[in-house]
Length: 419
Ligand code: EPU
Image (cartoon, rainbow, N blue to C red; front, side, top):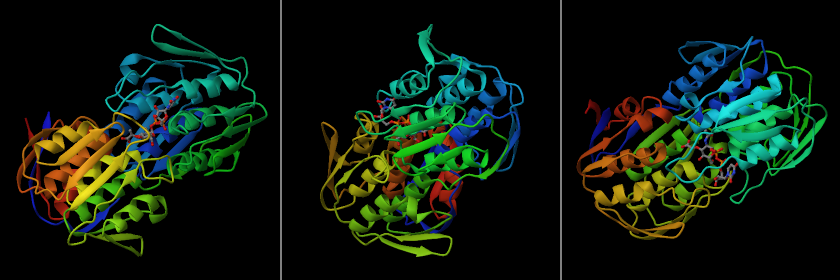
């Protein structure tokens, strides 16, 4: 078990390369199961979640070769059973269900189980697949899906909190091989879903309306191998942007796509941060004193829930009251009590966190609970005076490629130590 030890109070300065997007590459890897032909993915981040997905594909029968930032998958023969030991560690693994069902007409995938950021049901995934003609039962902890054939249908995938990202991905991956036309209404518009759709189109799928809430899919008989470069990770970019702002530094995010970050950049500017587009990325300059802002998380193109915890750290540095409302996962506030250990003044009121600033944070040992909460604790450690020790950083390694090295490259005093 490793910890990050951070000596804070220094502005981040310099350039950082943004890696490929974790949440794009996971469903794209699942999509390689749709064809027996070889697929090649580039700009694949070296993350434990990605390695884990590669292992799942291997256990399903695919041949997976990882070389640097490139993964080649050849799923010539696949079997349709993904057990609990494979699925439980990562909820993203549920997106093998759609491709396995489409390819084999039968799949058994273990239910992924609970998650620290709140209930994460898969009812919308199942509703969509049933709509395509699958019969689905839950047996002994497995989703058992069967279909003599999948048939195009009109599907509505909106839920209580809006569209579903992986649900849209799962159903889209089944619809591309269904007979006839499928219309998915209230589809997720996240750039990661768009990236998946681009990969599927490169494989021979017919999809219209990519990036909009209405996807129209005309099923094809089979898909072929394809090559694809994964989009840069907008949440990693957002994390570094907030880090630059909160430490009052200046960081150039190489490879970041400003068009994927509009809501985050808008809020950063409202908080007094300067944002400039530069060739191949953008430069973020923290203001002398951040201004308080209110943020509500929403489906894309709204402010992403995956950047909520990080944004809260910046709010602790703004004199006055900032209110952060979480509309995607109501209990995604595990970082609040840990931030309080560094001195932050945050009160939870229902789905909102009321942040009173500006606080001079001071270093302390803290415990990471999930990926984005961990990122927020690291950011808080960079702002705090003195030493912060963030424990259980395996969460960070799931979703941030070499975060400690990248931060050190920006002048942070941070080291990884074994507990
Ligand atoms: N929901 C349902 N029923 C479903 C599916 C979702 O009610 O069948 C609800 C969820 O409970 C939640 C909302 O719909 O309230 C949105 O969840 P969504 O399905 O969009 O989340 P996800 O697809 O399971 C992905 C990311 C998450 C990210 C969310 C929201 C991956 C691997 N995960 O999850 O990323 O927070 O979209 O943008 O793509 C992370 O990277 O740290 C992370 C948690």
